[in-house]
Length: 345
Image (tube, one colour):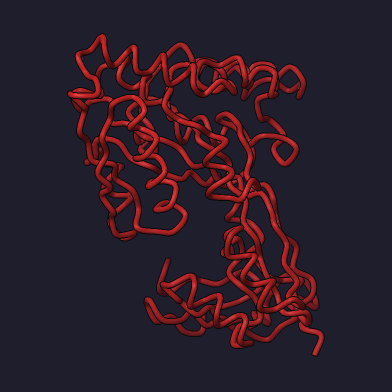
């Protein structure tokens, strides 16, 4: 599929050089008459995001990768290229803490709870995303998400409310009961993918864990190895990001929280909550379904299934002559057909 795709969409694969370039050509047999509008697309594979941005600013590229410009990098783009057309969008992508529940001492729910209580979510949003990210539960938060937990419910979940110092004091009390303290810290490795979207928040996470006597050492994992590593639970704790294919509870719950799902990286399993997955899926009344979804969301947060840190936003930048591209807010994976894009030059 990666090297010889059939290509029934608006474009067909012309050339693929791993780690270098992907070239696509217009599909003359595309089922939508008159589309796509451009003859070809070239995706240059640039490992360094800073180098990719420099290429865009210098005019080498017509647009950045969708959601490829972080909020701090966006300032650099606008400073160097004021005429660039940039749009910041929600991604349906959350940064979260994953914990291997089968590995001692993290099989102790009290330690997992203390870790969750250490997190200051506002500081993640302010430092990593310059304030332009969202706090939320398991489902993408409103206004971009349809099913997200209302703030008045979200704030009542232990560890998610605004009183960070109280949360951390409760976390330290838990750790002290377990024999940890300033002179006896729990030393761990914090694994994360060696990618900008993961690295920066992982550094901040290791710093915040110190507030509950946990001393973390960052373990950077190559992208090619990351997902296989966490799928086989070859980690203790990790900083992960979760991108959803669409903003719908069926996709999110069954993929990430069902007991036997391969994408349930933490090994969380609660059969009683899982029964509600089917109940909400069968409910045809949207408002009634939302109430069930909110109940599930709150229980997953309370259980520490996969503590959500923040919901990310990023930008897409285009040269002024690129027209017709629409940023999707319901998934980082959508908006890649490019069938409506055209060049005004």
